[in-house]
Length: 218
Image (cartoon, rainbow, N blue to C red; front, side):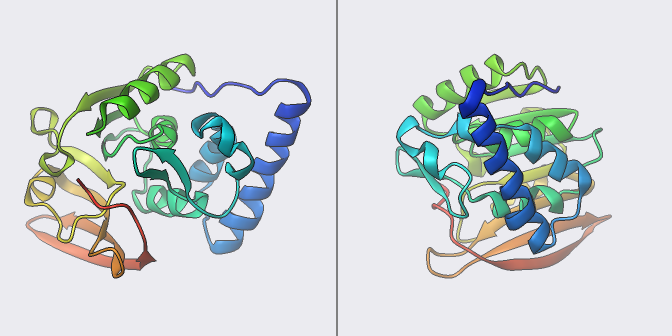
């Protein structure tokens, strides 16, 4: 499950220092307290998941464009969404929106199995190759419509959605197992809210986690 690569020489040292600063200034300072999440984000080298011309932006406090009108979320949002899933290492997790593969790698560090859906074939192919090169063996990928989830593998202990629908897709709600969690940005472009849905028997507890801005779920 663990498989992040290592930087080389001086460049690797510089990136490691930037990663440590990211953890301290962007995560811990904003109440990210889950030690497993902080550990995963310390190990996974974020700069490997951004385009070469964006390397200087890899650890900054903002999203990074990855092509095809998609972005890699800022580090704090990745940490907040991951922390909200409260993963212990035994879970089967569905990720909607593979994107660069960075969030996928974080989940692979923390969960038993990760199932990742991407609608853009070029992004999926790129992420598959990178994730494999980093030695992760607990991730499965597919191309498809994220709104429909991955019914053949449901139910899931947790679902993380990395793009925003205007309302929570019914298929995703149905694929969360008992006691499971769904973290998802919801709303139109200018009015999105990050929500945590926790399934409690036949009821749902919904917590608002704050205003966000994600690309739309297509």
